[in-house]
Picture 1 (tube, helix red, strand yellow):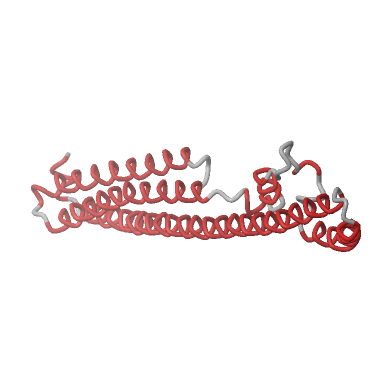
Picture 2 (cartoon, rainbow, N blue to C red):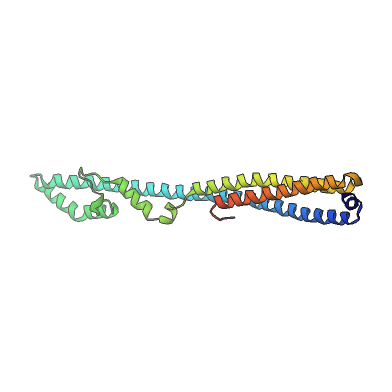
Length: 224
């Protein structure tokens, strides 16, 4: 039976059809590997963008916090000076203190707002809770604070790993295509052998490709 099949012209048709199917499958596999590689690049670019945005936002919050701290320090010094003048027996100093409390201190307090106006920032030793103020500034921009560049970098690593394993599957499919093409050129006595080798490698490569996709699909929680 194998001899009749080996000599049958239908074998040429079967081999040609299988070669066409394998060619299409290999092209699709190569396209999918390329798409995964592109997704890895997109993920790492997004991670870099998020890292720059997050760092820029943090730097701006630190700058603003230290700027407010500088104004608050100026206000604290002016307040101490006013209190010293008020406790002085010198009438001129007391008059100067009254003027400063009426005009200077309100302006300084306004500039240093909210450190000098919100009691939650005032500590028991008379200093200001800068850590709390920084936390409030970060909380004011939740979208930027919620950026997670590490998640994008991790996703990029997953895509890169998948691309490498998919490439192995593409190579297996290409090898199977070689053996199937070789069966077209083989003498009749070895056509079935080379065809069987090519078909076997094709099935193995197809299973490999499917398993890799399924594993990484599960790792990413259902994301292609």
